Image 1 (cartoon, rainbow, N blue to C red):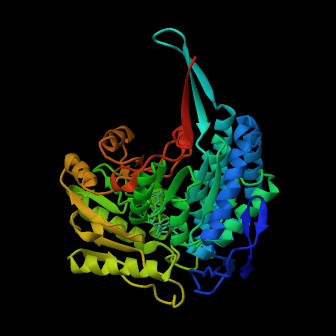
Image 2 (cartoon, rainbow, N blue to C red):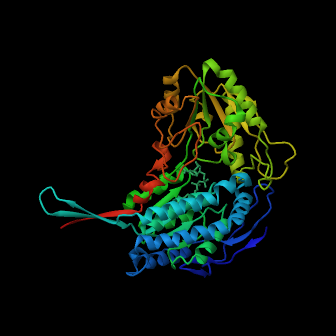
Image 3 (cartoon, rainbow, N blue to C red):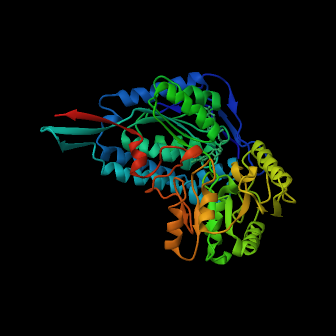
Length: 481
Ligand code: NAD
């Protein structure tokens, strides 16, 4: 693959960058360059924000359209994305190491499904409602688009996480500037091409790949009205500080360290639960924010759970992300592998028992691979149980009874996802409701577009998806009639 782009998609045109700076995306499986795109700078962000601003402020433009008319455009964009499914799979997988098996399920059909879901919501959107006043008269409540959105996305699910922001932005009648992460830029160009082909009005979607300095500039840009961010908790805190100072609405989807609670009645037959377990604990090489990487196991069945997870992790096919049989690809970057390996060293140093993995797979000399790794006998206070590793590393923690399991699950700075594994789904749901996280699943976990997704504590602020995810792009005006 050698894909070269020289312009940005801004205001419905292919615009020359302000400088000659370049981003060279690298194939995570082979360490070979994949092409070249321009790197956005402050001047490029100024142009993109200006285009989004003028599209939003146009009195007969996008924001003033009937929501159903916007929905038509959104559905055309979903179709244009679907037509590029193979391209999205190939580009995302090459750049960040996501196995094509996973990319085919999640980086094409899923984003277009989110877009169609929000197009459906837009068709039913009540933009104004009149209520009888308590003191007589009536009160009109209007839901207006919040304005120009700055959408900042990470590299791990670049299209899913872009769409979590873009779809409600469009449904609400806002316009946006997307800043993809430098590691995953080539898929963003496919999205730009789809946007152009679908006839999305000029300036509604603007895309400028750039690094964190240009991202920080975008967050504080005076013509931006709302910020939507997915990424690390550290960057989220910095962005929240800026938005706090500016009193600018912000949605933050940050890190996680979720618990997979295995109840004492769980079925550990991998032929039955293997796929669900994989998605909930190791999806995308462990580079997924919601994964249950703290596996809580009852003491009564502890060694059985250790054996099952050890066999499960040890059986996964590790290899080039483009190979359709690969289940675990490489880490997205050399830096990310270093981070994962340093946590594995900490796990060993803090006395956890390594039951499988712990090193680099044999025969894969190129690419940033790490073996799927399981640590048993982990104390919940250990570094590997408290900090987000963002790699294929599971920590198995023993618990005494359900109260103890819930206590351990909640003993975390994070609160994003989690799962409960049981043959009694009602019992599982009762346990799940005691866990302090934004989302949790019973015997499965995959964010459904109808359900708000997001975290509590250090996992973030606000929600994406569902009707609640749309309200984040609206402001309310009350008119006393
Ligand atoms: P990161 O926070 O370094 O970068 C994410 C994005 O933000 C990139 O586009 C980056 O250029 C930009 N950025 C970084 N600092 C910024 C700043 N101060 N101002 C503006 N933009 C800035 O994270 P990463 O390394 O790309 O991604 C991994 C992290 O993201 C993990 O911690 C993971 O848990 C988290 N994540 C969370 C979710 C979620 O939905 N909760 C989803 C994916 C990833």
